[in-house]
Amino acid sequence: MNTQKIQIQPIGIIHSPFKQLQNMPIQPKGAPDTTGTIEIFEQYAPGLTDLAGFSHIYLLYHFHHARETRLRVTPFMDTVTRGVYSTRAPVRPNHIGLSVVELLEVQQNILTIKGVDILDGTPLIDIKPYIEKFDHPQNTRSGWMNQDQKTINQKRSDNRFV
Image (tube, rainbow, N blue to C red; front, top):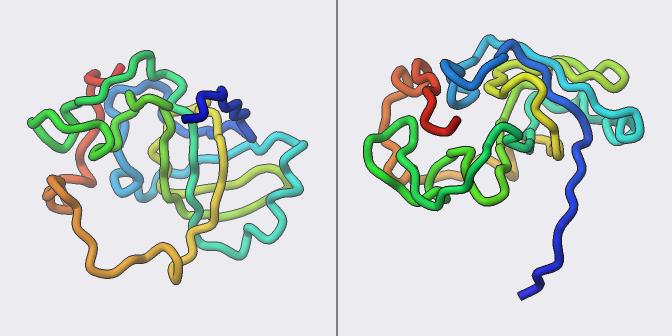
């Protein structure tokens, strides 16, 4: 096993209306009309060329307020303890988050997004375009997660991962 330390640097900062971790939506589906912006650092702005043609993007970001790592957690949508890799909890070993958001506009180094469920000031690690022909698998399973869409949309975070 290669134990060389990996260095990942942010490429920008995500700005949202969410200033504290409590009572935030737990997924983009819980914030369908919430808009935010992403400030891409100038040296990475040339990488935004042609991004405006995509309706949605994946955001990979650092859960910068996560202070611990747990391999077993009780997720927001459940009362049963689960392995962290079967959840989207922020207390995972590398504290990396993932959201799919709608891309509304690209203006120089500023992206305007919709469906943001991310804490204001979160460091952005990477952006990838959502491509339906690549990313929309058929016949999927959601493991233990069996909540209905209304429950998912209304669920808000509490202090379990603060």
